[in-house]
Length: 218
Image 1 (cartoon, helix red, strand yellow):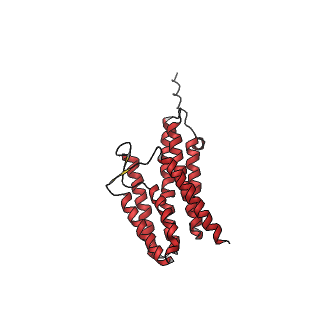
Image 2 (spheres, one colour):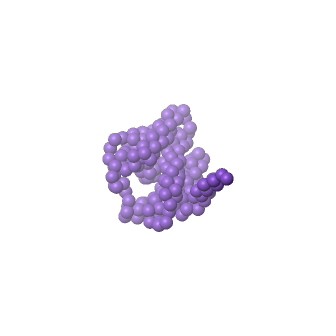
Image 3 (cartoon, rainbow, N blue to C red):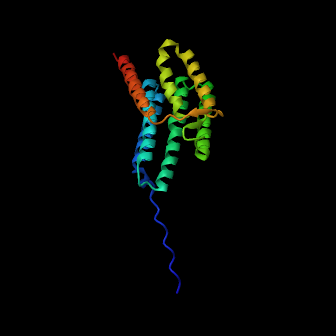
């Protein structure tokens, strides 16, 4: 008489993780980033920036909720971390690359810059997934979400320059931020009360960019 085979441990389905509340907010951020990419391709840059600003906010929210929730399994935490990292490459790597290409009228001269943005984002996220934070409040290099936060502010001054000059300014700025993303420097991790600062920032810039879009139709 043969011994019965041991029962295999229950393995959750992929879609079951999508119902985890932090992951729902992560996917909401992905939707915002995709909308940002869509409108960047169309050349509607104010709306594109609104999309990525909300992607940043949802990226912060999912982490806050994940840390406060109880009863999540190790698998849920690991899955959430991987999902968040993959969404970050879209929101803070692919989006700024597409934004730069589109603002440069998809000129071949802007293609190397777009590659550098995506490549440094992938390198940074891979490094962070392996080594994590230096300590509880310090990153190695500039966090990727800072790139689009800075870009969103700088783009308010687009009207001060001609399109060609501002395209060069954006190009240079993106390359500088990409260098800082992978630089061996210590940068602070903004958390806690900084979330309220970010929320006010996102709401404020959203209102400004909505006004910019609305004024163009008047």
